[in-house]
Image (tube, rainbow, N blue to C red; front, side, top):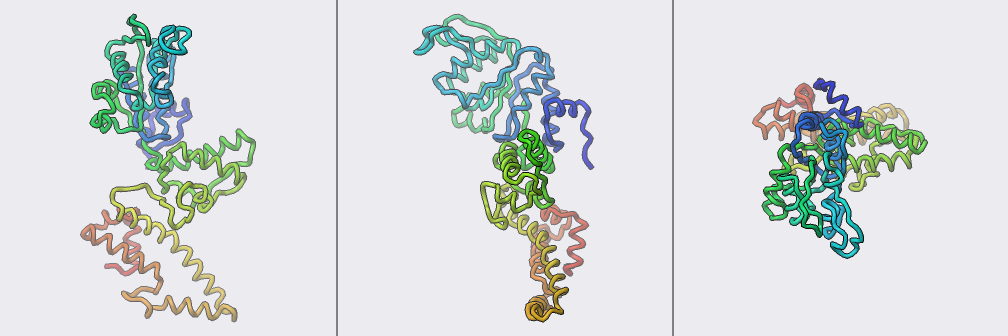
Length: 384
């Protein structure tokens, strides 16, 4: 049962076209809405491509400065030699090429909000200037000795571990604490569950509308593959993949194989790393194998039915006998019906139960199946 989303959060999502209902995303939006009316510095963290840019917009649009200017600055895209001039402005003749005076972003956005994306890319000298603005509201233009003031709210974002950057001397500790009065963590895409499918549908519909093509749809297997894949490039990568499929497969239902072939890693569907990385690599491997076993079981059952239906045809009698012989009980042990897949399932379940001392609930959680399904599997496979 899904947790009911407050009406205020729904309005924010609708206003900014934010797609998704995952708990981690809703919690991040709640934090942004809560801090918006309070004039504090905010640090937005999360991996690249996860959608961090939405949160400073929420803070600005739902705060007291919503009628003032909002300026977004990508600190990583500005050369080190000109970053101070871009942020704080410069006087005429202060450096080669400064043919006239220029206002910086902090002066332009006076009274409003400035969003500093990739703030960890700022040089240490610029970090010192930024700290002064946050502490006193004062700054100096490049080439000027006249102190100017600005009334501005700073929202910063980074995909870098700033604690580690501080320890390595790449980021000022005092600036970190000034920026991180409130921290908002944006979840990576692979942690957002069914949001992935919702986003894929939205991107597919947007592409079809923009370029007047037939929309693509997704098979159930493709949807499951989407939710298992790691998405290292997050929402940005998902949009890129959906745009490719919408272009070259217009009007089609996208299969699991078509999706996997569009991904930049693992062209072989049996070797693609479909699940997010984990510190427990052996546990990850077990989960991935178990999921593959369940998906393969239906295919094997279908094959058996087809062989049974074809058993009366003379040209198929020999292969049918061979398959049935392989599946006969005397080819396996432990009371199995002879299906090699059942043997693999049984070993996987028994190993998992053993690791958890027979605790079925914990075993079911590791295998990513319900407790009821685990009991049924144990009964079918003869596990006591």
